[in-house]
Every structure is written in structure tokens, then in C-alpha cells.
Length: 282
Length: 156
Image (tube, rainbow over all chains, first blue to last red; front, top):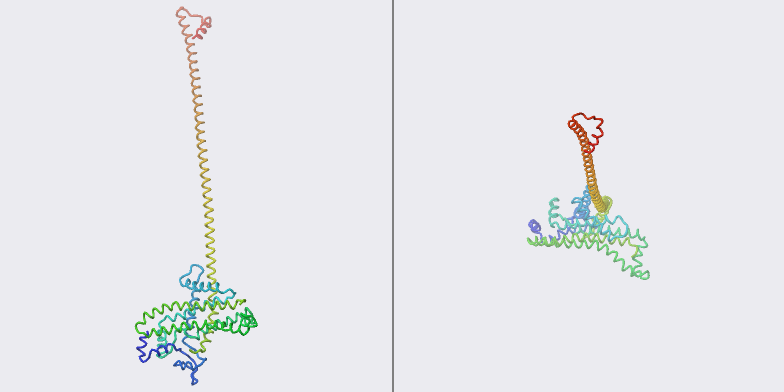
């Protein structure tokens, strides 16, 4: 794909190619006060916080709807008798999630199962976008928009905003259920009075608070880092001419593992953190 | 890499999708799974029960068969005994009948002989009288010689 791309964009250097692929289709307020799409990464950065990455948001929503739609479609035809092919597939996923929740989460909360299922399937689908050759979706978007310079990023999990959105959601749930189960005092007490008792309060805070925020970092940054790095390597492979074909194949095969593993990890960590939130003994 | 409002959009989408999943996806699927588990458990239990019933029925059938065989053997034995008895009875009866027939025949023969002898005796008396008449040339007074004739006939 990269070759054909380079034929069209003969002036584009390798670093420009990679840079271009790492940019987002950002919609926000320009420096001159008008609203519109950013035409360069610098422009996107100038838009500040109140801008939106239309590409990752759109694909994220599409995949979320795909996941829920597929499951709903299957449920509409599902029976408790002999399941068909698609129903079997979906049941395998749900049973996998259910087993993990049962083995890891010991509290009583009806939210954890659907939460874990949504996280696993949605992130899995987002990660799978990584296996589509890096130029196809951007080229399609450029063709649709009629703009050959359009920024378009196809893998939502390479956008820190998306992974952080997940992580913040989980984080809010952790805090909410911690306070609900242990009370505000109990929740704060965990930071202040463990592990060394109340006379070592500053030391306790020093030990516990980073651990608490590390949960957020381990959720958001690990997923983002894995897929950002994977994406960059796909782009670099895309630059090497015809030899990219076997290399793409190799890296994609390896990535099949990463795609599943990272989705599974995000799900498992969420379940573990939710379990900690429900655990009254520290 | 700059953080922007996408983070909020994703957060909202996440909340909405999880809620949807919690309301419309997770409960029906887990309900179906539970229902199937129950069905399978019921099926296995039913199979076990059927197996047990089958074993019982097989045992019962074997018992019945054995009893029937025994009964059959008894019946055959009885029948044989009865047949022998009947044969013996028939033999006895036949023997008795034969005996009776023989006795009757002998009695008849005796009777016939007797009768013949009587007839002969009567005729001999008549012949003797006739012969004597011829010899003596005149009729013998039958009444006078009656006793003599009878004596003669009795000697025959």
C-alpha cells in the first residue's frame, strides 16, 4: 500500500509519511476564531482541549455499535436449545467473560459482567483495526473527502484520548464503588492508614496514592503504548518497498496475539480493580 | 499527542454502551446460558434415571423369565407325570376290561356248552327212547320210564 501511496505523493519523504499517518482528523476552533478541521498536527495542537478527533471517535462509535448490534441481532434469534454458529461464537465470548468475572470478582455487582464484556469486545474490535493495512482506511477517507492530505487514523486505541476515556470510566466506577462499599471514610482511610498505621500518615499517602493512580496509567497508557508502537512499526514496514509484504505478514501475525492479549488484559485489570473496590479488607 | 475533548466523547460513549450492554445484551445471553445449563443438567439426570429404570426393568425381566422357565419346567414335569398316570390308568383299565371280556367270554362259552349239553341230553334221551322203542318193538310208556330216561340223560 505504501508504494502506491508514495507514487501519488512523490514529494513525501519517509518521515512525512509516518508523521502524516500519526496525525488525527481534528475538529475544533482555529486560532482565527473559526471552527473547522485542523490541516496539520500543529494546528490541531493549537486548538487546545475543546477539539475532537473525529476519526478515532467515529471508528470507536462504529465499532461499539457493531459489537452491540451483532450481539443484539444474535439475541433476537437466540435459543436455549441447540445454538447456531454465530450464537455459539457469542456464547463462547460471554462465557469466557463470565468465567473470568466469577473467578476474579467476589463482590456482588451486576455491572461488572456487562462492563467486562463491553470492554473486551469493544477494545478487541478497535485493536483489530490495526490488522487492516495501514493505508486502506486513510486512503478511503481521503477519497470520500476528496482531500489527499486528509488526516485519518483508523485505529482508535492508538489515540490516548480513547484509551484514557476507557480508563477514566473505569476509574470513576472504582471510586464510586469504593465509596459505596466502604464509605468515604473507609475509602480515604485506605490511603491514610495503610500499611503503617495512622502515625505514618504521610508515608502511607506516599505509598498508596501512586499505587492508586498507577491503576489509571496501567489501563490507559499500556493499551495506548502497545498500539501506538505497533502502528509505528506497521508504518515503518510500509516504507520498505516490496519486502514489506512478508514483514507485514509476520508483524500482523504477532499482532493478532497482541490484539487479543491487550483487550483481555484491559478486561482482567478492570475486573481486578473492581474487585479491590468491593473488598472491605485492604 | 494532545489530549482533547475526544476523551469526554469516549467517556460518554463508554457509559452509554456499557449501560446498553447491561440492559439489553448481558441479561438475555446469561439467561439463555443458564437455561441451557439447566436443560443439560435435566437431560443428564433424566438419562441417569432412564438408565436406572432400564436396569430395574432388565432385572425384573430376567426374574420373570427365570420364574416362567421354572413354571414351565414344573408344568412339563406335571404333564409328564399326569401322562404316565393316564397311561398307567389306561393300561389298568384295559387289563381289567380284557379280563372282564375274557371272563364274560368264558362264562358264555360255559353257558353255551351247558346249553348244548342240555339240548344234547334232551335229544339223547329222546334218541334212547326211540332206540329202545325200536328195540322193544313197542312204545314204552313214557311216563313209566320218565325217571329212567332222566337218569340216563343226567349221566351224559
